[in-house]
Image 1 (cartoon, rainbow, N blue to C red):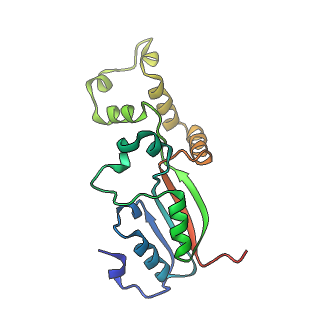
Image 2 (spheres, rainbow, N blue to C red; image 1 turned 90 degrees about the vertical axis):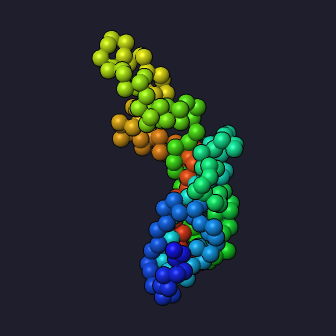
Image 3 (cartoon, one colour; image 1 turned 180 degrees about the vertical axis):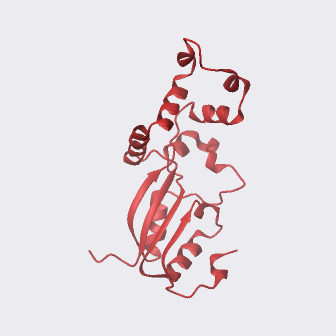
Length: 178
């Protein structure tokens, strides 16, 4: 179902949230314009989508996970997102890079952990050398996932250096006069 098919009255919402949706829509410009139509002046459009200009996309090329079909029809760079929003009458208040960046070994580790392979499930971790038997990447990721402080440092690093695969955007209907 398309948003337009819901026949919402114009200027009837204060906020619209679309998380991980734009890349799955054949006409994202149409969706952005429809959201603009149903938002009140000063209304907020918050969305999250993949970034084709991410470090992972550049590094992995055609092997980038977000290029796999079916699923994603459209990919955005910061420039294309800002242009589409500006052309549709939005002012971008915040553009934050999010998501896990490409780090060699991370995807392999995560795939291995999810699959529940013998090697992963067979280790009890009770021996003297059990900590050192884990690969460094695995130990670092486990530490990050368990520590709220490290999660914050990791998220700050991703945002500061624009390393993540996704962007979270906060846009407001109407042009900023400042």
